[in-house]
Length: 483
Image (cartoon, rainbow, N blue to C red; front, side, top):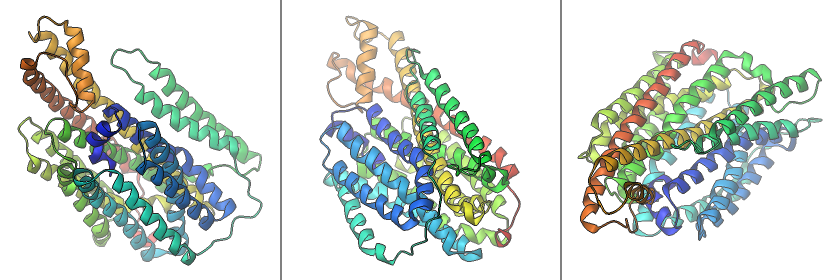
């Protein structure tokens, strides 16, 4: 919902696109870092207790976010507290479905679960855009407070599954896994076109911590102690390959949901509500096909349905790449976003159930925790990495054009470049601090650079989806009835 309100957040909180990108990324990182631990706590404390606790923390966070007066306050309320609450809620919802349903009912339940997520994606940008354009972006968070109160009122109807007796929490494993995700994503955010940050070292630290986590978990299992995650899960092809496929397409979803709002507000000067309308073909098609995707199982296996979905998402990104131009309109986004949304809806309708089919009942909490953690890690990594590609493309295009032009000859080119880049980071808000007769020229330069940067982003996303399609070859060819 906040993706369509980037311009308003930049203006109201006196920040930059990079600041908002960091907040969005941190929200996903917090969820990714804590979801696996929260899933394990559900085994120790009980599923219902962890879920309701997550709802309460989420409510506190969204209230603080609605009252934010600056970026740090928004980060604390939204990125951190809401992230913690979401991390506690997400794996427990999958756990409830997995324990409550079986067979076709479980496939349908996961389809509805994905459909509800699709509904949020469908109406979130529209509602958020409406609030931002005609009232304030804060109403989006206040609406979440109302939803939290409704959930609290209805929680008495939730079934309580007893905790596992004698199970202990793996504190060091939780610290290692969470730190690995934080540092690897932080390293990507630190990438600088001038190479003045230790991004590589930080990414390497994240990878090293993840390797240590796996080694520690294996040692803990051999000692007969409770691990944070049962590594035997990864012996299941459905679970391992399903999570890998999910990782790659989730990265592209994050990229689309961040870069397109930035582009239409920076170049096309769209309002928040117009940005939400631009994303509507993606949102609605994803919602519809996440509900209808199960119909495909009458003619194909879940594996083939997922592969079909990936091909359709690739077609959608290709159409966006082909239509990307300075004179494009809102309608030019529709074909690409529609095909992309159809593909996502089909994938969402199958990937969760197929991945979870590789887990035994005793592994449901850990499996659901890892699946959700992977999704959020992919989203945070996608927002960071694809956002960096967009920013680097913008900076490169602006720098080259300004140095080759005769703009404002009385001002050093390095000064002009720095001023223009800061202006772009503020979504072209504020004073550009160059002679007014040159502003239209600079505006055109930045728009052309944005088009080229978006084309580079689309090519990268197609490559990511191709990798996901190749990996999907190893998904098990099992029909839903046999899962």
